[in-house]
Length: 407
Image (cartoon, rainbow, N blue to C red):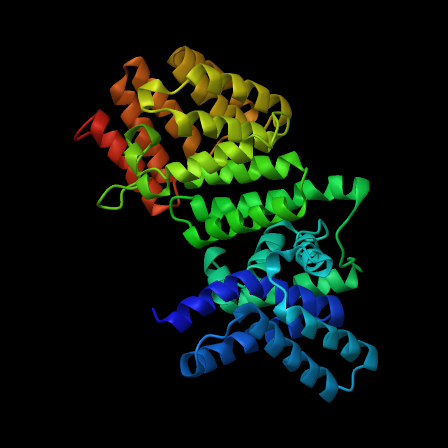
């Protein structure tokens, strides 16, 4: 990769959302803002390779996008006020993103909170955040959601139209409204990270989730659940290099080479966790992740502490999946019989029917009780239910370990 390409990739990641947010604030036109930002990136590909990388790449992109917007609005004979306000953006081209300048901060947060507005369906919020805040191409967003480019384009257009028709304010909420809206923003980041961290997910999405979580923590200091979410992301991501073997097969936590974990990331996670407290659900999940991240070996994992954290988490989030994970923790802390009893509770009412991880948990706990044949059958059943090829292969491999040749 050339110096120009590297500089453009970095500037795009750091500046795309800021440019789009600034132009939306002034023009109120989401499509115009995105188009002008994309035009600036396209021109940079040509100019930077020929003329060299400018001293302030982000400022260069802002200037080109602003000028493009001025041209479009002038041709459309838009009111003079918007042109005057756009001209003010020229002053921002020399301002580094990290100066804390109020408009820059507000623009980024405005865009995030607008994309994550509860008037939109959760998946629409994730897609709009990827496209508008992160600058992920529509084709890549479509691939993540397993739809065609045209379908995703229509979904994004509908989401923007709904924002306009519903009169969603382009601003950062304050006071009680901020407290009420922030969990929705964090839920979008959590889902974005999950889509990147899943066995067959897109790793770049996890990177974007971490980047946005860092940004939100920096721009909204003193919000412990933001810190809890960021700590959780960093702990989980610290294991990325060790999650697969040389053949690309998924490795469970107990089989990973811990020397390949990113220990600098673990240290960062512990630092962030110190700002998170112990009350919110993300902070509690981060405490659980910290127990795994700091254990020197699988045998030294403090499962009793993890089980205690899950007891606390289930009080705050009594969902079937949390109850399932609690069953795993108790199974390792207090024996497989205890885990299977809690698993039975989690399945009450059919809450986990058709959910492959539930069968996999039953299989592992059953194997720990000594019934390897039944455990193998359960693992094969879980594999048959799984949609992801990587997960399916891992479950089938575990079945083969327990009962070779058993079909």
